Image (cartoon, rainbow, N blue to C red; front, side, top):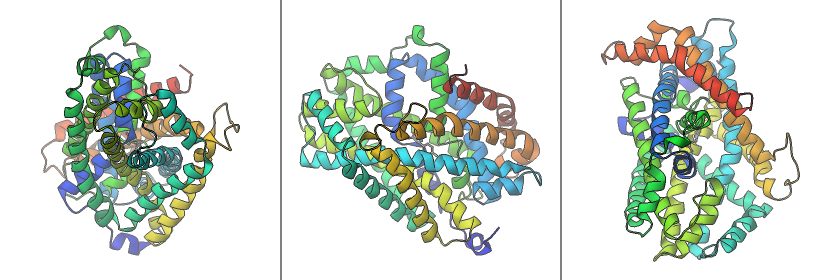
Length: 455
Ligand code: PFF
């Protein structure tokens, strides 16, 4: 390793609450607001929820626990961790490299969506983009996406903010910020939910979200649930390994991961309860993705009392959710460059922000000057989303599961997960080993082949 001073005074999370806030901050993100509720509603409601829960328990949670445990044991970035813990001469460290590439690609398109969210906080304050006519809200969104400068400038605002927080370090930056933002997120979301439940469409919204319709549940729905569980828990790209390296020695990792899973699910459900009653009250179609956030919801807000205030609150809370996720994404390459090349943190952050700005520009301009530039039939935005979510994350997840289950081995894994036997959870650790060895890799592989159109 190039730098011993980096590890000598290694930063880390300072309290159990800080660990929880930062890890939850990573899991909670845009996925909770525009993916989970819409997918649940259109894939069979409570039936989908049940499958998602199973997918989270048998695939998401074991891989998350494995990543956190590997990171804490090695107290190093993912590349160094796998190099140190793997057999000599075997290239397991490449999993860390895949993770770093995935982090850059995800940040490139994710930061652009966060840029739109930031722009909508501004539009909310101005009162623009608020109209009961969806054609008008569609026009406002198209104007933003097709303006190269607006897209780029808002993306730079996002990147400077995230880079600025990381400059303050792990405990002074990530932990301090997520510890304040996560409670605020729950508060805002609960307030919006309570408001939404008073609307006329509350019954229709809740029934869209929760009515079990098992006729809609087929193989594709199951695979969608596994893929969502994976993206939601921020696994497969070294994020959790990086955060695990900042965990305190006495932290109960399975308990922390379980709490993060439950709190993340709560945010997703609350988001659905806040959004769909309002959407149904005005007879809109429940959309997913950007259309829901930037076209349908402003049209809904325009018709509600205090609509402008609600719009600002909603996009502020979506920004909060996205900030925690972005912090964890950027921290992966920052730690790698800091530890491997011995760069000071501020240099590593500057370089990583610059790389994301360049890759991100390709995504930001996908709606304007680069609109006609397609590779494999996809524009840059879609391509980076596809490659990271459908190839790199699953490959990373499979390899982490195999590494923890087979290479690092049952005894070492059980020893580390149980805090050297202190937690008395060795039986749980053994179940996790079985899942990591046989269940998670196979399920993730099937999801990946499906995502690639092979199955
Ligand atoms: N979990 C985040 C979300 O649901 O929006 C997305 C994400 C963050 C994926 C961090 C991967 C990651 F490393």
